Structure formats: C-alpha cells, structure tokens
Image 1 (cartoon, rainbow, N blue to C red):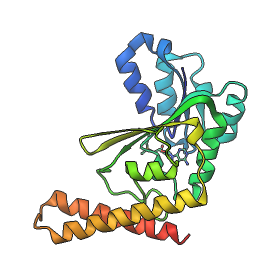
Image 2: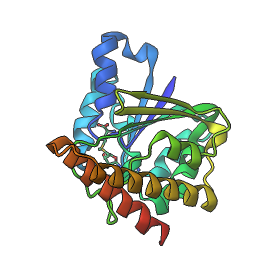
Image 3: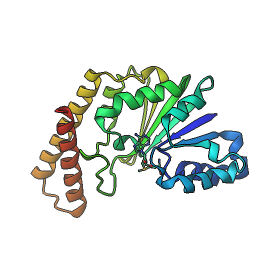
Image 4: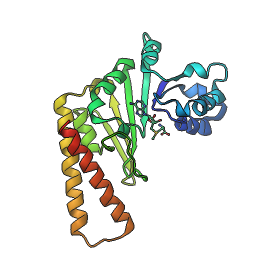
Amino acid sequence: MKVLDWGAGRGRLLQAAVDKWQNSTAEFIDYYAYDPDPKDREVCIGQIAITWPAEAENRWFGEFSSVRQFAAGSPFDRILLCNVLHEIPPAEWNARISDMHAVLSPSGYLLIMEDLKLPQGELAYPKGFLILDHGAVRLLFDDQNDILVTVQNNRLASYVIPYSRLHITPESRRRTLEHCRNVELDKIKEIRAGTDRTYVRGVDHLRAAMQFITAYLSLTD
Ligand SMILES: C[S@@+](CC[C@H](N)C(=O)[O-])C[C@H]1O[C@@H](n2cnc3c(N)ncnc32)[C@H](O)[C@@H]1O
C-alpha cells in the first residue's frame, strides 16, 4: 500500500510502523513523506533509511510539485494527516484538500488524526489554530454517511475520508467555521457557569477561547 505521510515531521508514524513490523515493514507499507518545512528533514530521512536505505532521500518531498510529479500515473492509496490539519489555515483548506485529491487514488482514503486536547498552546498560523471535532469534519467534507469517525477517550480523533469527499466549497467551509464558533462559545459559557475551578478546566477554558477566536476571525477573512 502506497502511503503519503503529509506533514511528516520527524517521521513518527513510520517509527511506530517500524516498531510494530520491524524488518517486515516494507511488506505492509510503501512509505513516502511530504513536509514543506525542512527542519526535520534529516531525522525523517534517517527514519526512512531504516527500511529503505538505498532510496531514503527519494522518499522525502519538500515541495508539493515534486509529490504531484511523482504520483502522476501511480497515485497514493492513503494520505495520512497526523496532527497537521489544525496547522492548515482555514483560508487554505480548499487548496490543500484539492492538492490531496490530485495525488490520491480514486479508491484511496485520507486519514486524519488529531489530538482534540492539544496539550500545548500553539500559534500554528497567524490566526491561531483550529482543531476540528467530528461534527466539523462531517460538515467540511459534506459527509454522506461515508466518513468513518473514531474518538478514543474523548481525545484522540481519527477520520477516514474517501476520495469522493475531497471537495471543499466556500459554503462547507463557512458552515464548518460557524459550527466551530458556536460549539466553542457554548463550551465557554458552560465552563463559566460551572463550579469546577481546577487547572484542567482552566486549560479547557483557554483552549475553547482560542478556538472561538480562530473560527470567528476566519469567518471574516
Ligand atoms: C505537529 S507536527 C506533526 C508532525 C507529524 N505528522 C507527527 O505527527 O509527528 C505538524 C507538521 O505539519 C507540517 N505542516 C504544516 N502545514 C503544512 C501544510 N500545509 N502541508 C504539509 N505539512 C504541513 C509542519 O511542517 C509540521 O512538520
């Protein structure tokens, strides 16, 4: 299975696969990495070299044009987006999802994984960050009951999205942002009305405020 790790960073996903499959990794996945930020390039290539020593450099892409060229004629079966979606500004959702559509096989899937409780504060793009819950993902991709959603411990979310759903319209983007804005506002009101004054609740309050502001500002872009 030909897999593209989109926003691969240090290649943590591949590391997990190698931990599990050891010397047999190449029998299960045909791994490629893409990350426009070169800061973790060497580490990721080192990770790839454990399984594919002779071709590790050719399995790492820093530019989407190279991914597109590589995938022409032989697209990817899976695109993995692990802790990356919240770093893509809403103004770019349409363009980036179109890019993914261009290099994914028509029988392929986009797998999105997100930590819904991003443990550290982030300023992933100038207007903050936005972590999408399952309601938001369903609106963004106009779910027709063909998106698989799994959430573990109210925290680790994964969304499996078929190729046919990889189209975002201005309308689906607006509905998604309105959903996020409304959900976060309700959360802020609920937390303020409650009596729980623990640190954890305080962090939830701050996260909800940040998410609300990002959604609000993105709606006025
Ligand atoms: C939080 S790190 C996650 C890295 C890796 N996926 C992991 O789970 O360990 C986010 C990564 O997404 C990359 N990224 C941010 N915006 C991106 C974009 N538009 N396209 C591809 N990668 C992007 C960043 O360079 C960074 O390496």
